[in-house]
Length: 161
Image (cartoon, rainbow, N blue to C red; front, side, top):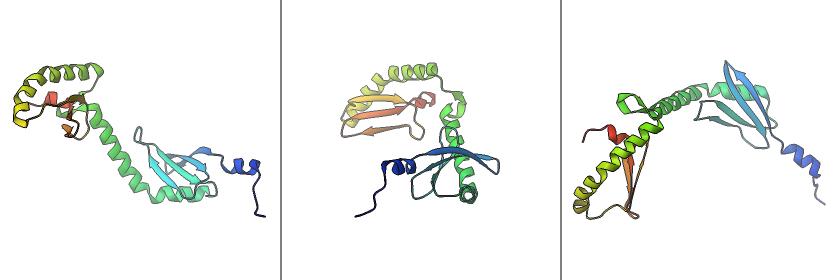
């Protein structure tokens, strides 16, 4: 008959513990759980460092793991900070996106849309089924030909036509 663990011993192995360790001045949140490998993440929201580690791994091995990857951590934190800053500002003019600014930008683009659609629908040979306006981080717009949907970046309001 194969060995079978009791319910009490199975639940003790599936517990998670979370602690914070400081590695060379860098706070690292360590979550120990019943996994096989160690995983390192940098949170996009604030640049915080998180490690998921197996229950059996020593704190020394976790510290070494972070030190080995410190270059990657710094590069990733810098890149994510730049992305967050770009998302906060509206192009070269350095304006900060507020709800009011987004509403005004949307109203300006929506006011110009009928004239633009009137001009471009005959040229393209098809009118869009739906137009969505939002802040985009890497594009001026996109379309889905199959559905006829168009998405435009609100930051177009700051571009000269």
